[in-house]
Image (tube, rainbow, N blue to C red; front, side, top):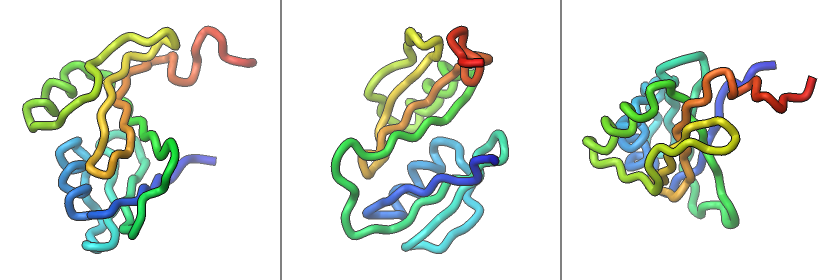
Length: 125
C-alpha cells in the first residue's frame, strides 16, 4: 500500500491555492473555486484542497512536508512573506522541524529527518 493523496478543507480554495504554490507544490488540477490538486515536487504523492462551508473543529489537521534542505527552504519561504510559528529546531525524536499555518489554520510542519523518518533507533522490528 502507498499513500496517494491527502485532501484538506478550505473556506477559500483560491487563497489556499496561492499559499501552497508559494510552498512549491505544483498545481495539476484546477477546478476553482471548489477544488485543486497538486503534485509534490519530490516523490509521487499528491495533495488536494476542497471547498467547505465550515472548517472542522478541534485539533484540526497537521500536514508534514519533508525536505532535506529545511533551513534553506524556510529562508526562501520567509522571503516570499510566509510566516512561521517556529523556526527550524532539532527535536528529541531526531527530526528538524519548522512550524507554520496555512490560511485556513491547518498546521504545517516542514521537516528534515533523513534515515530517522522511517528508521529511528527505537523502531520496532
